[in-house]
Image (cartoon, rainbow, N blue to C red; front, side, top):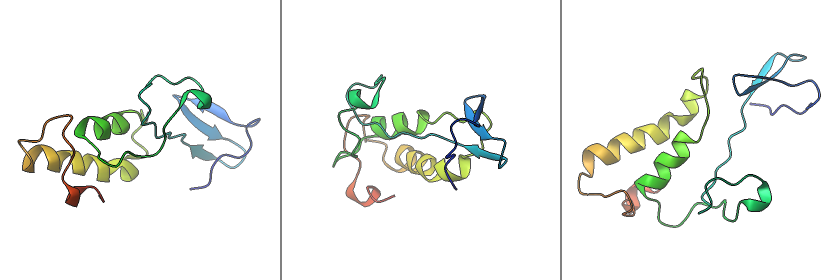
Length: 107
């Protein structure tokens, strides 16, 4: 996927960027693990690196932060959704803020 380079010719439709000159849809996905979830600018984002211990709450937050009303980037987010489904089904004692098991950290 090639990012939309020309900002001047880019249209925004349903929250999705479209470059009509090359007929290409573009998505801005920002990973944000900052404790300030409502960061307005890049200067407000203090921590964009994934923490060493992920929790179900953090994973679900990142999955739901992707705005995709048409479902076009589903093939890219499916692995995270499958991980959440696995954690719910196979780790019933895992609470929202407990670190996920080490073998699931690489998914």
